[in-house]
Length: 252
Image (cartoon, rainbow, N blue to C red; front, side, top):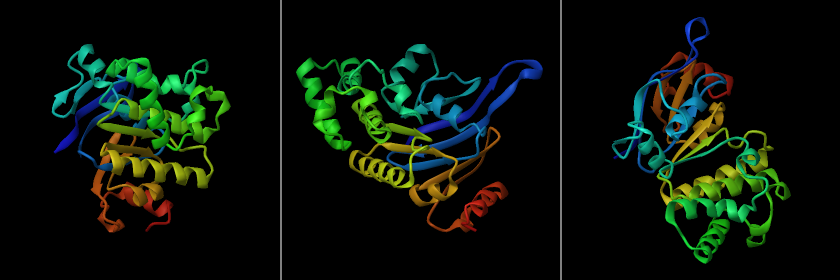
């Protein structure tokens, strides 16, 4: 069963000579509980696509369905969609309120989506802390008191608080050293298997994508070039641009 369907999705910015095509008739589907990677160079449309799946930008054309329901019918359906799909962006620090303790940040979705009382929220928050390898003592800390990796774990805990059907990582481990990057990716894979949400990992790193993902979508200059169910055999990629990325990563 498909949890997500992207149908003929288009996005343009500007008009006339200043018009930029960010997405050009993109179509694909993702099954429930799958782990897919969307790969492409900077400017390929990956982040625009992520923000549209998360309901943060309206398309110029086409639609996105979650569980068979179109999210861009009107603004009310978009607001209802925020719980279903959560987006974790590259800069976790900017996504956290610097004046709000990390405990309160994680509790915010519990208050907004589930209307939990104060004590219930705190209990659930500490459970999410444990799930994301955060000490309970961090509940009263501010984001500035945490390392980059810890801020990322807070962002993950806050996203999971909404109990999403789909979680999107948009270049979310860029800027970290290799050991920390590997550790966070391993942790999110464990969480995905444990909780069963669909995971979309957006990256420019083809080598990483073929290691972690069940399926790979390759984008170039606003166009989806290829969608491949990956089994460990790089010869399944037929598009020449996909092969260029594989060669650049030393995989062909």
